[in-house]
Image 1 (cartoon, helix red, strand yellow):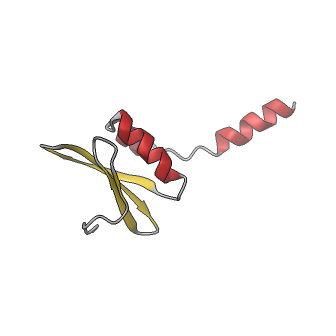
Image 2 (tube, rainbow, N blue to C red):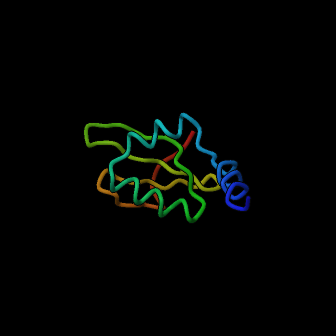
Length: 83
C-alpha cells in the first residue's frame, strides 16, 4: 500500500508540459546536464534559440536569464534582453 501511494505522489509532481518535452529534445547531452544543474537553483528551461553556431538554451529564474551553449557552458549573467 505504501509503495502505491508514494508512486501516486511522484506522478502528481510531474510538471513537464509537451512544450517543455519538445524543448528538452532539442538540447545536446551537455546542455541537458547543465540544465539539470541549474534546475536545482530554480531555473526553468524557457526556450531554445537556434543559430548557425548551434542551439542555445535559455533558462529563467524569477525573470533572470541564464544561457547554456551547445557545449554545456553556463552563463548566469548573459547580456540578453528577454521580451
